[in-house]
Length: 236
Length: 137
Ligand SMILES: Nc1nc2c(ncn2[C@@H]2O[C@H](COP(=O)(O)OP(=O)(O)OP(=O)(O)O)[C@@H](O)[C@H]2O)c(=O)[nH]1
Ligand SMILES: [Mg+2]
Image 1 (cartoon, protein in one colour):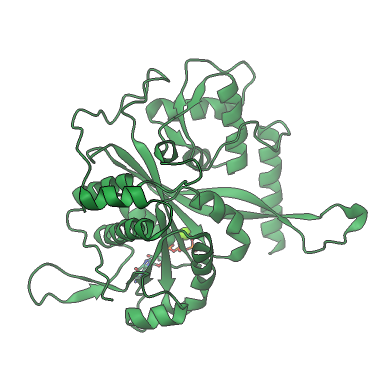
Image 2 (image 1 turned 135 degrees about the vertical axis):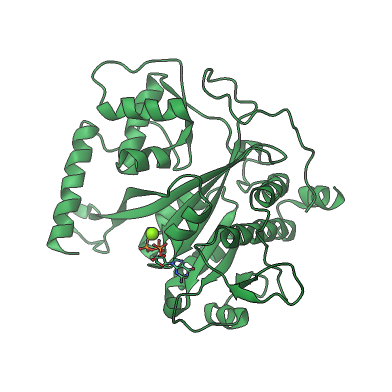
């Protein structure tokens, strides 16, 4: 991928003293890591984050299904959702960046949170545990509906059957363009064998993030929104 | 949910309510990824202890709303309410470094391809052994 002109003089820090000297401050980008219960979300965030993943709670107020409640007042129900936060600084990028990672559970009652997290995001990684494939349906259709680029990473848990990416794609009814990662080459050497993708391995997680970023670029070039910037990228 | 779970949740509610002096809505519109920097002001007297904690955290490093809540061990809403107080006192300022300021148009909130390219380069530098997956199809 072509890179924008590097600006080596950019400071990565320098935010402390003045509230107005933000010129060199890193730009924040975010990626959502979604998946069902126990799919490896916290593990994946922690594998690449510079800080131990923080578990954060938020209350979500759901309008109750009981619309005909007394006084016409919509009964509200509050649930708690816990999600992960991790970050990594990328100071020597062509421009200083900071990447936020949000790990979020897959149940559909949390879609309000997903909207918040998805706004302005680079994209999403949907973690799939093939023993509980159905837990991935909701996040997959959510990201499809809002048009957020996403990739699927299959965690191979001990004892689980190894699936081919096409089998996972078919089971999740994914368009052919959506990358599905099930395994990674062990190295560049000829004949190197592939190993199962593993959320505990920082290089594997970073590889999926790179896959997502590449896919997001393609997605942007396919979409109707940015014909101009597409040209710029291809010409660069 | 179990009775125990409900009770635990209720008591968290009570603690949060006390912390925010009964307020349930933050005064400022803050996102989960809004980043806060230390400002020139000082908070007035009678602030919650947690406000000092927030300022100490932001003195070290600018922090997102989510990170502050996580480090305080408080719900997001509680953190947003306290951050709002600190913004009013100019003890905190919102960091103006989000990607969306750099977006081409207001309507499109997606990061630009330019930023995505920079992210790709940066990740490759940080994880030289990471191998992006190549789509077979
Ligand atoms: N074999 C294998 N185990 C994994 C992998 N990723 C995570 N695990 C293990 O699976 C368990 C669950 O992982 P978590 O990261 O806690 O999953 P989670 O999605 O955050 O789970 P919840 O937050 O409870 O929904 C942990 O014991 C991990 O060590 C993987 O890629 N392969
Ligand atoms: Mg978790």
